[in-house]
Length: 222
Ligand code: SAH
Image 1: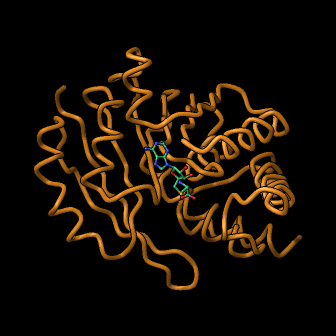
Image 2 (image 1 turned 60 degrees about the horizontal axis):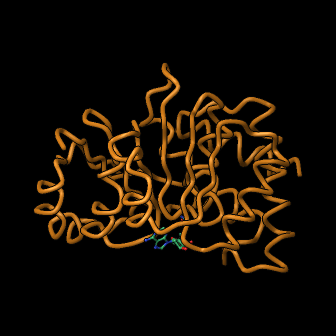
């Protein structure tokens, strides 16, 4: 366990994220619960200790540096699956008000059990398709400081799911791989139509020479 703890702490520090003891303990408990649960219910194919630390936890943490820490931001994670990146962000930064959305019921049940076990407050887990939720809960429109999403759809589709949730002045941060150019080009028109503007594309490095990217899209108007 010591090695994993170091791997997590050092990896986070490389990303400019300082994890306190409580966050580290909660992330390691998250890992164990995910591994146990995954034996009965298929939640993720990334399940080995080190892979969970790097490909789920550290990868999720790359988003944290982009989120304004001073105020208790409202964050929605669309297609969160087993909680990535949203729940990892919440564990690392307690003051977030987090909404997790996924269209697969068994994943949402896992998230509900996990958030209770980890005693996380201000986390809402919703079983819904992102595009339908927006119609059912109109109060969610333009209600979030940040929308985040990883591995759910191509960017042109993803902006349709995510940008409507973001308030003007807020941001949608899409987690993508190293080859993002084509997707970004394809999505440009949709982004504009939805009142968004590409702010910045950040390339991020994870241990093991894994290169990912963060596509930061600002909502400028409705
Ligand atoms: N973000 C997680 C899960 C990625 S898998 C991770 O990176 O590990 C994609 C997830 O998106 C699945 O759990 C699937 O149920 C969910 N999903 C796909 N389309 C969706 C939609 N339209 N609305 C909400 N969730 C969706």
